[in-house]
Length: 311
Image (cartoon, rainbow, N blue to C red; front, side, top):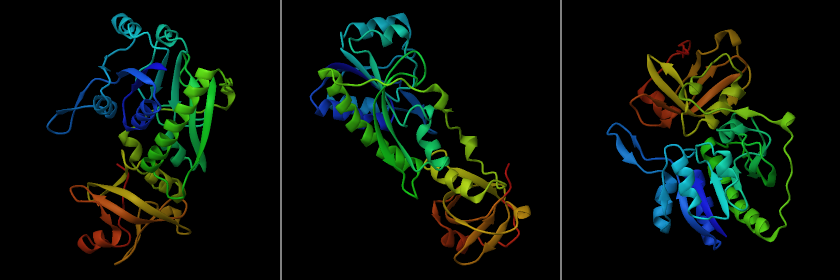
């Protein structure tokens, strides 16, 4: 099938590659404009741009895909289908109706649950045991279109946002190819979403990682995993940012001591929460490398009663 692919981050790359490998004619890859990154402000290509260049696919990087000249440019390719995966811009009604088979989106949740920009992280943070990928026929709403296919993906007990990201990207690639085949042969089914069962999630922001120690230990531990690798869960130690990369939930303790170090010996660093305690297993103090808690304590001894205050 002749198609245009729209995507930006790593999540979209396996999907693009799978479509090409399946023999589809991807005539154009549309991705976000290059952006400066890091202290040196060096220009960095999106993951999809890099993949498209490797595949020899033509590129288009509009600042606003809805602009008339952008819409006109897309129309020159006479594509039968647009495939979208984490592109980062909203498509206009004109674009949605342009190709013969419309536009389909690879969304990293089991719609209608977790509509919006960050379904992967919230699945971990909220303690979901199962999530998945949905291929939807796009309409003018955000993740509100008809469901074409779904694939469930279980979460491991130690699942992080990063590990789930990889799982869902691979699942999405497989499911997208299957869905395109069914669109081609006319066997795809369409199911309207139940809006009453929908959950909307916004973009993940850095400040979300600032740990509120009055929350239950289980909630904080899921936050740690959900925000790994970005923006990471963090607190403050002696005025410095103190990132927590891995933790274990312990029962008991006095909730009135939330945020205080309960135990800090050669092997254990335990913090009281609003319900239960959290044993910190892997940490990173500002300016230092990521390390196991016992290694950190050898170079930065702490005493019981010290506070890790939310700032």
